[in-house]
Length: 192
Image (cartoon, rainbow, N blue to C red):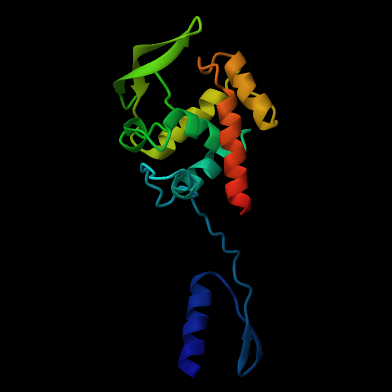
């Protein structure tokens, strides 16, 4: 027992902590504050889901990460993801682009055909989509993108948020309200 106490005294002294001797067998010491830092995305790997419920289970960390650093709720992030990705496209699980961000990025681009609605008609156009080295970079770019002057919005209900995206040409699909329905499903699933 004496050896353990001696070892603790040496450890405390090494850490710059001066133990207080209460009596020959009892010592007291104030330990420094211990801060544990975690990452929501630790261990997260983008994967295609088999079912709607699996989308939520597999990607909850991603939805929470975006919600933490933006004005969207996890349900709204899910609604946006679900409408953009379905159960998860190659752009998501191979190129770390969960929200179909277009354009050149430092880690390159990937060419895909994408449906767009122009003058009320759906057409297929070829677009350059951003590729990212990791999922965090893809999520951070999406967060920056939606918080720019054009799309930035106060936290709001699902319908208002998705209508705001549509009104500001974030997406061309007039079925923006489907995102609202996806967000409702997420809330129902989480509440169960």
